[in-house]
Image 1 (cartoon, rainbow, N blue to C red):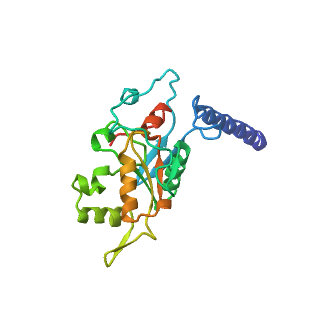
Image 2 (image 1 turned 90 degrees about the vertical axis):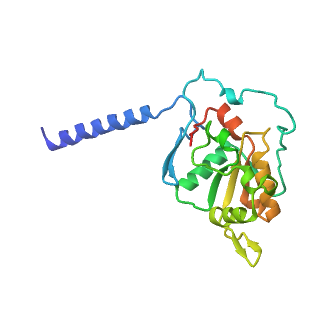
Image 3 (image 1 turned 60 degrees about the horizontal axis):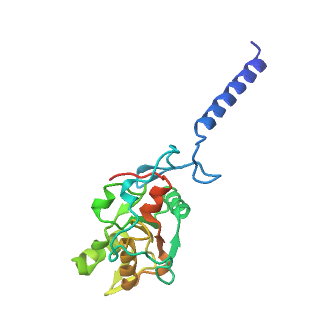
Length: 218
């Protein structure tokens, strides 16, 4: 076979293979029109965020209940505090994407207690139960200071806090009826954490599960 014909056949075969790969990744249920799914690496672990491809799937029973006693499970406002941005699913995914690209100035935090986290959390998130920052729940000043410095990047200088190099914290919990991430955010604000470095995913796991987005278990 002539070299020109061999090249033509090889090119055609490569095109078929590439087309087949594209078809294989052509999901029936994407995230947006331009984003089928997200794949990356966060904290040394592979992360995949996509939606459930079973179009007959229904919501996780853990989030099917419509009414919970209030208090404590009261509906949260859309604006939690001045300067704290309320975000949605696409913004959360964008933060995870930035983390996967090596941006270590961002931390995605699941503020729920471990019993809830065991049922599933957002890929790339770390668990910091709201009780760990709350003195009224037994959190001692030394432990809180360690979290602020070792995990959040704050600096303590002669009894004063310097948050100039602190991380942007993206916080969530169970959703619009859950007070765990709001409590974490309000506590951090009292410590002086900059409001513009606190992002709140109000929909939390309730909306994440309703949209069939990927979850992982610890």
